[in-house]
Length: 239
Image (tube, rainbow, N blue to C red; front, side, top):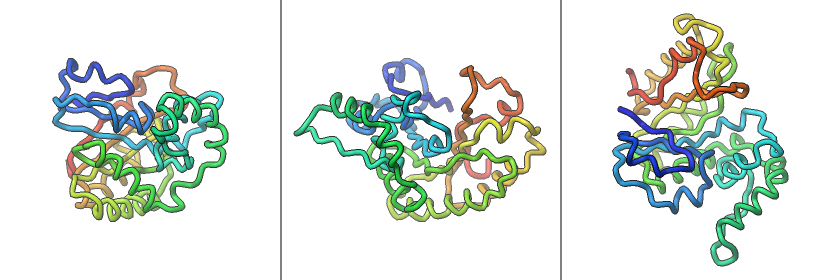
């Protein structure tokens, strides 16, 4: 099954011949996401909350456009003023957000301080968007010595919250920094193996959404063979 990774441009969705699409928070602001007409040809629709982006060094001076989009999603903790069509139009609202992104970014709250509210916001947005499955938010996995206790505790709590809000299938998000898997062969990477063991043991999730990212790459291609060997989008639980 082929799922198209979609940013702001949706015009190629129908011609791509994909079975579904993965939308993402960095691709467009929340108001645009929920108001735009989506092609009806998709059998699977996913939305990546991308909470893990907070674990990268994103400076407003360099990433103002990205942070402007993220600011419109409540789980990033920026306390963004909501859009009111009676007071302004969406373009001016977004322009104002971008002009004030430094203050919004530096005063942001910790999404993990009230994890239940963070998960609720991410789940509810995906429900409103009409997703076929729910991707649970997660912090970035970057430490090759991580014991994964925090990751699995947050995942279990997220599942508890999500099951109170939807009966849609739940996907555990596994956002991995390239450095987590770049320096060890897949068969000897203890973090990857621990992830596989822990995820397959959790029968309340229907599958896994794996994303690979890097802060320093200058190419859109995955060129490290160890990273590429672990690269996938979704798989069924136990697969």
